[in-house]
Image (cartoon, rainbow, N blue to C red; front, side):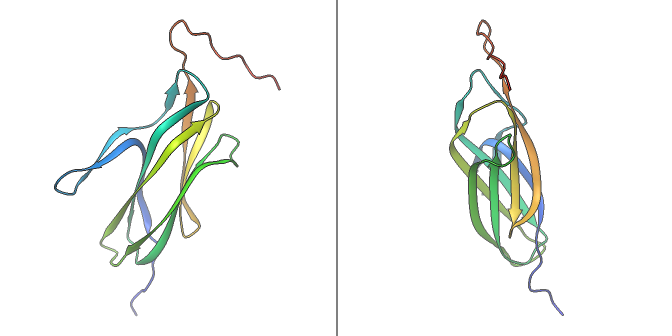
Length: 143
């Protein structure tokens, strides 16, 4: 019996500043992000990209990518897209672009990647307030 549907594996997920395609079809990632350092808050990122590569699956799927705020409930940005894998030896590459993303406060944000509502990966994206030299630091929140 041959499988008609196998949920794919998430081979990788990377947050970056830009994804471009060369003439030969290959993709290259620019500015892979580990930490977001900003001189002031709130701040709006003009564009962020999430590069996801899926493999070892068969069937049609729905990918959901979410950026979650430090409170771990607020969805800052969300995107859904459909993709298909016809052979487990093939892969599918999806790139999600979020524009005008507002980071209201410092803290740990999270990227969540789901396929057909199954969480495949959740990883932290620390946003750090790093004032320019001579700029006063933000006042501490009381609470």
